[in-house]
Image (tube, rainbow, N blue to C red; front, side, top):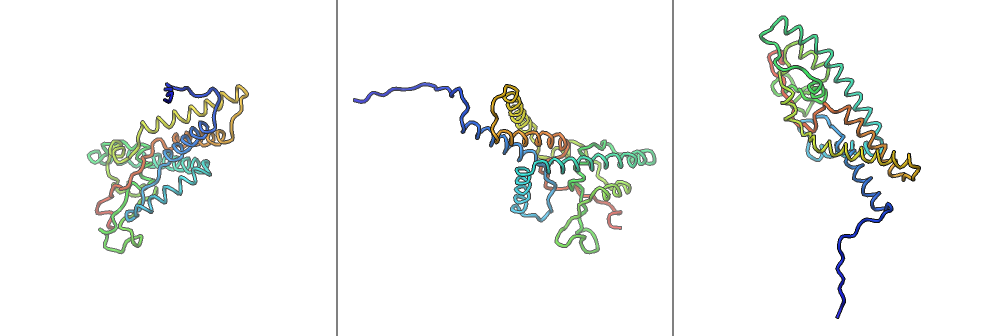
Length: 239
């Protein structure tokens, strides 16, 4: 006969283990890098593999040079702020001169981010001349193109909710990542304040978490993973 002893719940040891540190750091690192990225709208004929490779490229950049992602996010935010500032007098002038044709939806920073990420495009198949970009049936408008199209009254009057519906941003997922990153930051600060050792992996993950929070703040108004732009149509486009 064998004696079989059943064991109930066993609590974790008081000390920190290698697996626990690796698990917490790698999960936080992966979530911070992957969820913080807001990629621009891809070309229309881009294959799934091309989209995956673009995302993977930026994930690697975020892993090894997170400060570069923060810099790109800062540049895009400055570009979006400038576009909003440049468009404001254009829309105000149109509202005075043509009150019936004034925009019903206020232009927000989300609109500017949507614009600079390639959210407004011209379908070159409708043009009589050859496409601007060989092999691409649409032309994405940059900030200068958006400004000129706005002067011509060609920018579609879309709402902020319309852009959010196209976006795949998950507020709950972002909140969970922010909580996870914030907890790691507080944990490292508490250990250093108590003069307890902090591993090199934790310090590296701490730097990534801080960069991820900065990227979140800079890209807070930028839509996430939009694949199809809004078409700019009108007779002036053909001219």
